[in-house]
Image 1 (cartoon, rainbow, N blue to C red):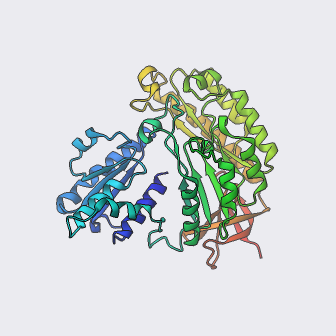
Image 2 (cartoon, rainbow, N blue to C red):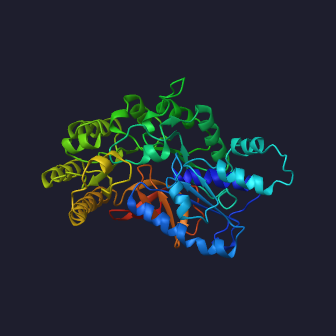
Length: 427
């Protein structure tokens, strides 16, 4: 989501005449877009913000914009007091404060209708930054902002606000604009992406949106994330099963394998229901890959409860498991009402156990592709090798002198590992 927000802001900045630079000391404007979903992400953001002060000291005209969840939808006066060298703050997905400041600073005629100019810039179709035009293969499109589900551990509702869907026509227009600029793959984003359209008058669904996006000429692949077990419909699974451009890869978190912990998290389903969902997905979409999220060390989690999570992962054999150690986020229900009583050393032990298990599972799953031919969409060249992904989101590396950027090619797999594959182009 932050990548998509940053790209939208970059598009607006270029319309004002700015160009990107990779050297901070050369910049007239620096935007730090932040995430605080985990403590480590917040610490990293604070550290980076602190490192910008010397640049501001040397160049007082430098505009520093702090954006994203460190600010949140309600603002963050403490942050502004602690870091006075920040010129302007922006809530998540809202580039308006920075653009408005720059318009004011650059306006020669102080009577200029600044609001109309601001609206004109932000309402225009997204234009990729110059250094990405013709080079960006895969792009993100947010379709649901915020979240109203309020899992007890999650800071997203307080930082990104209540759930609200983007207008259908706006999404379609952005998708066409990106494809016209060379993008081959689109990923639709939402904290609970399956709930798209429930708050709109017309009640469009994610499935109907996928079907319309599928008709865009030049678009090769479509993905979506993140799903929630309670909102994955038969209509959505039908769309994935029936439409060739929709990648057969589903991201649907379980978070824990014990029902008591799931209730404490306010997830709204049981481990048995999650197992049934995974079985249904695999039955409806042959060859599908499934990714999940798991939190270890949630308040009150016993060894027995953790073992149930271990057993679920062991039994379901997911392609990917995104693992996290619980860290209390200020203002969440779990931080206010629950004791963070699992020692850090124990959290790490449980994390390592799941990490080791998932490595074994992923190694086994990927080994089945040895000697097989897979279709790969190539995204970039890195360290002399082309890098791309299969429809099931497997990372593949290929050595080739050809320019493979944006191409879909068949690749013979010659090596498999838990996290990536290596192959050669099929003759």
